[in-house]
Image (cartoon, rainbow, N blue to C red; front, side, top):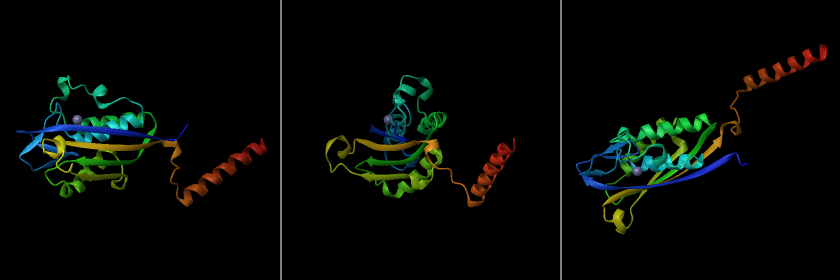
Length: 189
Ligand SMILES: [Zn+2]
């Protein structure tokens, strides 16, 4: 069995008036926001789904039903943090995340550093382990017409034990000395 597992996530929400626009946990000033049972954060939903997929844990809807009143208007980071916990319980570590926001408007580039910082913090990973890109749909389809914002994500996760422990030289020497001592004890008895 492979020590690494990959997952994919895909999400889209409609842009409507009277809602805040939240992507990657960051509020972006705009005259419309994403409609959804939760806060409609399609980027965070795509990443959450990619993580669930990599761990063979179904999808975001099976964990957080859109019929459940508890999740009405919910901060999508609640979902992301919960899923990160599920992975940890099963001995998985996040290797890296790559994601793309699909939006005609507004401009995403100025907000990407803040999204990376917030998402990395929620997943307890380094910012170098997450990449976020943004592109338009060239005026085509609902995203291209500015009626929706979508997101795609892939996640690579690893069985925690497969990531070599980062020991300092001193710690490693100490470990070897302990092993030799153990061995000597056995020799004596
Ligand atoms: Zn969603």
